Amino acid sequence: MKVLDFIKTLGSDFYTGVPDSQLKPLCNYLMNTYGIDNKHHIIAANEGNCVGLAAGYYLATSKIPVVYMQNSGEGNIINPVASLLNEKVYSIPMIFVIGWRGQPGVHDEPQHIYQGEITIKLLDDMNISSFIIKKDTTKEEIKNKMKNFKKNLKEGKQVAFVIEKNALEYDQKIEYKNDNKMNREEIIEHIVKVSKNDPIISTTGKASRELFEIREKNNESHEYDFLTVGSMGHSSSIALGIAIEKPESKIWCIDGDGALLMHMGSAAVIASVKPNNFIHILINNGAHETVGGMPTVANNINLPKLAEACGYKKIYSVDNFKDLDKVLKEAKKNNKLTFIEVLSSIGARSDLGRPTTTAKENKENFMKYLNKNN
Image 1 (tube, rainbow, N blue to C red):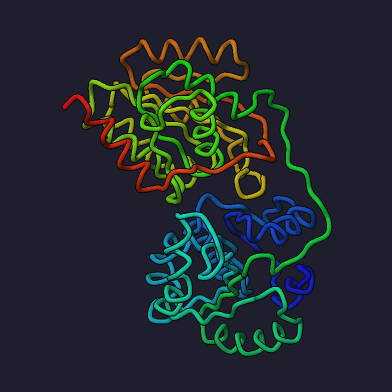
Image 2 (image 1 turned 60 degrees about the vertical axis):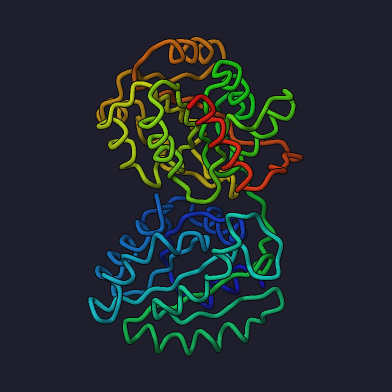
């Protein structure tokens, strides 16, 4: 169905969310219509952040907000839904729009399979009434369902529209870009060249896909790399756990700005632990590129200053390959907790592939490598 018809039926003038490729038509409509407009549209750090923000909007206006997300974000909303919104607490109404990745019977990546299976069950468990929008769902069906949902909303309950693949349509195109010169895949190639056989933990999305293909191109083993799938924002915490247990190994974490923002507190924990063998590389393109390119707030934040405030010992920010190579070599040699911001362009190869090994194979090979000398 057309996004505009869907928007009109919802009848809200405030949207907040975390972008999702399944919801790209909706995200592009909101960006074309509002951009990042504090009165109408805010892209938040994580889905729980969205719920709190939307709750504040309702408290201030008595109007119903809309929160959009990929179904992987359901985990981030469980606490505020159960302990803030629920009718046994504050009874705050809200509309959720959820992209259904891993829908049973529809091929998807491994990180989406189980989440897809439990998407509707989680909503049921949270007492959130839901309606699935399919490609052939009509405007009339949505209007009728919304009439029923309004009863729930008046009672201070939450409702959800779960969006199947290709169920929403939006004709206008929007291009996301920045002025940075370095391409992320090339950046990762330079990291791989310097890190050599050191373990790398890479964040979810295209960065891990690119790392896998670089190893293929170089005829190198994949055993050096842990490719984080799903669990956005947690790769640095995974890397910290490894760095603590493997103090004689240099541990590299390839992170993204959207991922860092999603669970920013992990940076403070890393710095408090002070692992001298940890190199935290933030590839910052100011975008949720893997799910379409919508902006993050990273361009409004001095992330190196944030790392300094947290307590990282060596901090760099680079925007060219000459400086990148220099700081990578310094980080390899130094025995200090290091943070490297690398300013990257937005974009990836159209023919970028996906790992040909399973997640379990990746885990087992990586664990064997970590413990090879034990």
